[in-house]
Image (cartoon, rainbow, N blue to C red; front, side):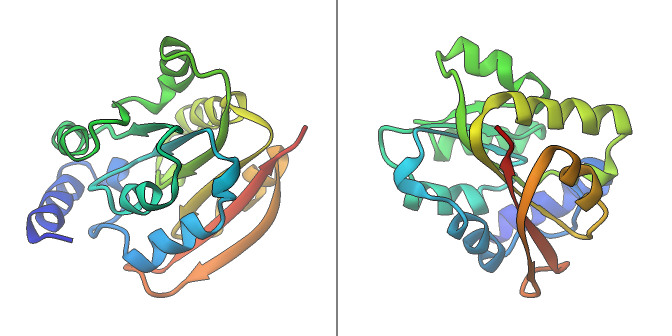
Length: 186
């Protein structure tokens, strides 16, 4: 993690704390825990929501097939621009609420997995539901939604739509985080 990325993240948090959700980018320990949950040999299309400075994206890049479609969503313009430069082969977009539209535009029918660092509980109920509907509708039956959160507040909401296979605690992150591994019901 460069000092520039850490400073950019902190400045973005100060400007829009509800959108960023943390004062510091995800740790490499959290990023590794997220990607360890994925059956990479089965991934033909994957999306990352809230890509930020690319900490988790770099882990995705080290595991995903070169043939796979990778969609990155980051609302912050400067971070999104940096992602486009660092990952020119990936589809970079700003608004995850338009995920299905962007998939359609690029000829992607379904995703095998969605990885998320979005601070869902910071969002309005309406936005949270719109985002989760995009995730549900984009995933193939049996597809995975892997999300980290800083609390267990999303557990009941996620359990209504997904089978939560496990929740793993990651203490080596600031703040510490929970990784939800959720499978889409058929």
